[in-house]
Amino acid sequence: MIVPTSLYSGDISIILPTILFIGIISGIIKNADMNETLLSTFIAFLIGSVISFIISLILVFYTEGGLYAIALIQYSLINVIFFTLIGCVGGALGYHIRGELKK
Image 1 (spheres, rainbow, N blue to C red):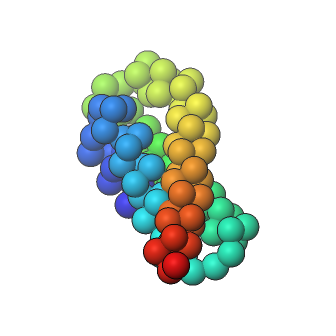
Image 2 (image 1 turned 90 degrees about the vertical axis):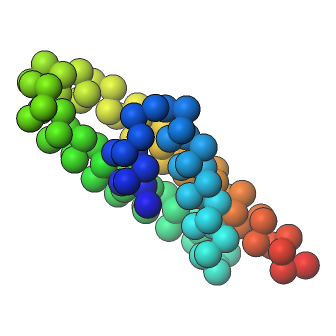
């Protein structure tokens, strides 16, 4: 779910709430303790962010050129870390929401 979200919407104001929502959904779906939920969410968002970065880099290189691809590389590490952090926060929220729904 991370790859289409970050590729199809170029607006950062749409990406962040969607990534938070995806994290909440993954936290609700994962039926485990808090540590396992956060670890699986972290791994999923890290892999998804890296895959979407690679696809974006290829698309930008072939459509815009090498200079735009270099600019994308320069801020990509911050985006991967930020998207993974937002996803983990959403996973933690989803874990607590699932706990409240069981009560």
